[in-house]
Amino acid sequence: MTTNHRIVLASRPKGAPTPDNFRLETETLPAPGAGEVLLKTLYLSLDPYMRGRMNDGPSYAPPVAIGETMVGGTVSRVEQSNHPDFAPGDLVLSFSGWQAYALSNGEGLTRLDPALTRPSLALGVLGMPGFTAYMGLLDIGNPKPGETVVVAAASGAVGSVVGQVARLKGARVVGIAGGADKVRYVVDELGFDACIDHRSPSFEADLAAATPDGIDVYYENVGGKVFDAVLPRLNVGARVPVCGLISHYNAESLPPGPDRMSLLLGTLLTKSIRMQGFIIWHDYGHRYQEFFDAMAPWVTSGQVKFREDVVDGLANAPAALIGLLEGKNFGKVVVRIAD
Image (cartoon, rainbow, N blue to C red; front, side):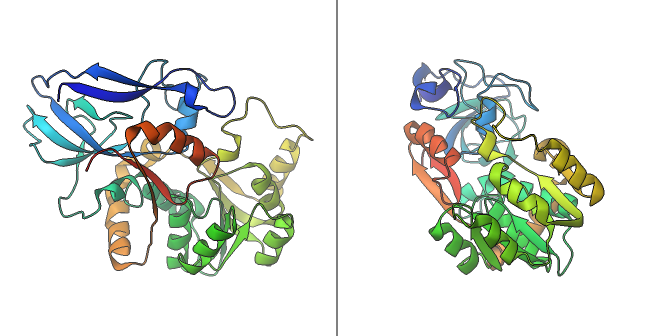
């Protein structure tokens, strides 16, 4: 273990990322010093937020610098340890980024239960996406039995969990997804009451038909035309957790067309709607154990189902992220880097 392979940000994207924005590098791997551990990456999580970190504009976190390793959550194994709290062989949740090995001083590492038969779940339904779904829905959305919850990107890592938890809380759940296969999966496998294909030319009419009593909670992952269709369906007192806006991530300017800001603000005002964004670890990090204690039994019992889209090999991470941003993934995207 004298060399490390990593993928760095080679240039900032203009619009949608391309393979040229990434570069695979090989570097000499230093030995762990006092109080450090050497981590071997087993699984790398790919998530939509990474597109924002490729820009150099202001955000909730600093951008990835040119020539710096791309950021990302990982499941890693301790290979060597000079740290009293970690031993070789321990599996940990880390933020090692897009690389095969990483050094850590132990800060931010979370030891995983060795009984976890699928460690990659710590990056999905039992990790940041599941945590995001759970807190955004229950703390901001606060669905009540019998209410209608609409979930954008319903087959994705976050949306799929949102809908299933909402069903467990007694809500009627309508998903929005792209393509017939995803629509069928959301209804037949995940148990949503209905799912609408946003690619359909009759999307707005289909959404209206599926929400005859309006929408009480809309979990926002997408923005764009999906939000435009949802906005007039929101009921008085509706709640809108804003998790992401993937349809806008590659935009370099505001979309063309009429200014809808007055329509949005007027709707929020006259219908007393609560619309709130959140950053999961910043706003809810102190409540992770609460989430895990609730979610783990649901996953174990099969009440919450999950789907992983596994990509093999670090070199394939750029193409996988580009595909994720285009909606080509089906489920939570993880890159398997080592066994």
